[in-house]
Length: 427
Ligand code: PGA
Ligand code: ZN
Image 1 (cartoon, protein in one colour):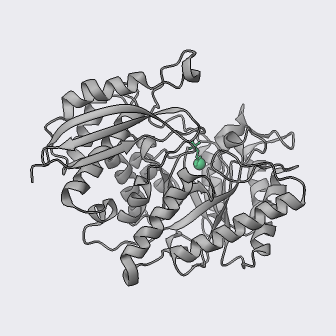
Image 2 (cartoon, rainbow, N blue to C red):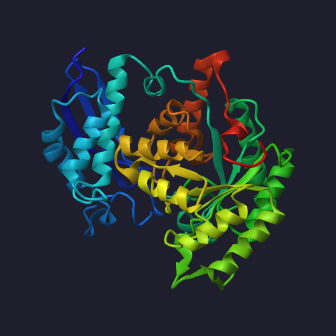
Image 3 (spheres, rainbow, N blue to C red):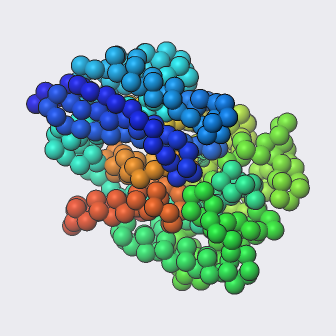
């Protein structure tokens, strides 16, 4: 088969927040086709790949005309003729063409959509589902999902400060059962909110709107929802994405809801109290992206019993993962392909984490589409964990449902990663 890239086209489509985003179609010489779509974050790390937007008044400044022009112009000129089967060479070409540390010249949205489109086209040419194309003969597992039950932070008008209150169905026997457990907890959480007169729709990723009097109130309610659904805490555990960079001001952690502020050491004690009182098994970005001492102290204090994920802190960057591992910061990485800007750089960050014995969580963004590529990456790379947002709205459900289809396709050979995917904890 001739798998050289023959055609590349970018178009504007729309994401789950009704904002424009970049879609790229690739056609290979053998006729195989692939499509990649850029997602978009709202609570972004300062070191992640730049999401290139047009600015100005139209579309709130979120236009992607420049990013589209970059794909149709310089990117096409550079990668037409390259072999789609050599993802690394295509991604290296994108990195070199851009020439900046954060894809600020071409736009990370332009490069990730292109990179994913090429990957899909290669799988299509091989006649394989993407996950199988990525895995080859290596073993795969269905990921342990992290599912948001309450949204907060930048995804809920900062109604509460903590961004994601999530569950992990560690005790499920299969991905299918994990979804049943999730559905039950999500439903009970909604009913408890309704009973309390606080049910007010959903946040950006589909989690219940966090109408709480304090951040801890949300933890309390989530624990009650798990209990009401009838699960033990060694079956369904809590995961938090603190996204602490979002509420760090002048070196202090400022909780708007409680109107209190803490220095790094005091903030660690607040988190300690929560970890002691609630069944929390994973915490993401407990401190701000520039608080290295805080991250080291947090990992030292809790890293032997809970997963400590770096998201804004590591921005899907292999070098940052290696540095953090040697500095004793974090024991897991969040993998967002558009934070890196190419598939190969995302994979490199994943491999650096695997090398360090860390947890690996492939993740969506708060701005998503019907695209399900990340599910295939999580399974094909055997990352072990997948974070997609909540259990509502089709841009989220499309991902969970895709994993169910892959589990069904694997049949008796399907293995659910469950708690084994965690670097520590209740194994
Ligand atoms: P974002 O946040 O996609 O809005 O940047 C998601 C996360 O922090 O995990
Ligand atoms: Zn995060």
